[in-house]
Amino acid sequence: MQMRIQRREVWLLTAIVLLGLTLRIFALSWNTFPHADVDGDAMVGAIFLETGGLWIEPPDPATERHPSLFARDSREGTPSLQHGPVWLLLGAAATKLWSGSTLMDVFLSLRMLSVLCGTAMIGMVWILVRPLVSRKAALFAALWVSISYLLIDFSGNGAFYVLQGALYLLWIWIALQKPTRKRAAALGAVSGLTYLVNYQSIILLPAALLLELLQCRQQRGCLLRMVVVTAVTTLCVAPWLIRNAILVGDPFAHHLVNSNYIFSKSGIHATVVDYVYQFPGTWERTAAILSMMLTSWLPNNAFYIARKLFILAPLAFIFFSYGLIDQTLLHERRNRLLPVLILFAAHFLVSAGWPITKFRYFVPLLPLVFILSLEAIEHLVPRFRTQTLLLSLISVSFVLTAALTFFSVPTHTYYYDGAITTDPFSGRGEWNYLKDNNLLPSP
Amino acid sequence: MKTLRIILYIFITGCLLFTFVNGVLMRLTI
Image (cartoon, rainbow over the protein chains, first blue to last red):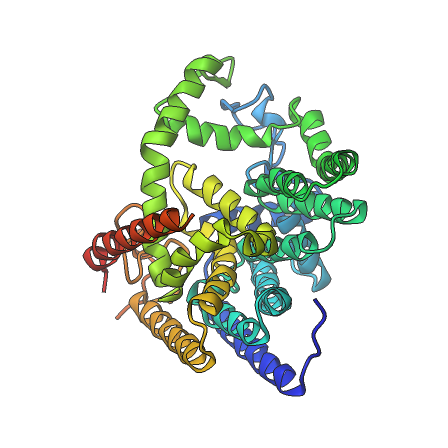
């Protein structure tokens, strides 16, 4: 696994990181307004700085009671549940450091944090690809992360997806070590932490368990490691579950927000009883959701993910698609790439099984596609010179798609997609958002 | 194994062609 780092390699990597950092600082400058989810995080962060509590609506007995998802009087305050606490607390803590206090102050801190996470991602992908594929592939992986327009824009818009992506890479790095109890504990810690960044990262726990199972040689040792992963993950998320149990009476109350979204997309509607939304019985719900998932969401979203990857990983996606065949069928390559393959499959399934694959779900997915593409190219194109030429050509197409995306939206922002090809709603999401909120610059 | 690989290569080629034409060329916004 150990390889000697050459001086030229260090210079090239430094240049790539500096290029990435510069582009991300530009992204910081054009993301002058928060998009919906980021706005929510910044608002909760600002309320936290003011009241010391994580509220969407702080307690206010003067207001009128309104229905909510749980049996709690809305006048006693609506707790923040939609997102995990890590990102907005990081934003609030960073804001406190420079004595900021308003929503826009927290938004600026979140944007700066996303620049840091997005830049760290460049180095992390290099560290991963070097022992996994080759030195050359590692430099190209770092370059692609550095110049990918999606990763540039999300490294300046204050959304937590770059942190989720960086933690995915950390999870893979740990998963590539020898299976020991120490590794199991580390996987559990990262899984728990990432879950508190974005609930979607719940996949890291079953992914870690599956990894332990597939690498199992001794039944007892492997069972013990699976217990360690589960226990450490639970321990990490316990404070959030306890907080929710105390405030709302349900440790998993945060999932009510997501369930409510899935129910409404499955045609299941709530009735309000005593100011609390009530949903039909469990079996009826499960049948409706499963039927929608298998017949509509999964196929439509898989198509959307594939068509978007043509743009987000130009040319590389073709090699990625063919590469997946041998990466899963051939024993040596499957074993070497196991953590990347498991995490890719898990993230793909959770994103495509969702009612609509949001464009932002590509942020943690894209570095995994780059890693698998580069490994595929190394095998599909054996000649060194042809390989270098192809990788350079792909890098040029990254620059071209980045330029096209940059000029296709007047604010250069890319949160809701719709640049180059249509968004998941077959429209131009970012344009529509700008138009609806009067954010289009005057001609 | 060899037959399975050939079938999968043909399947992926079909999927890529369909996705590129129907998903990229026919959905351009520029």
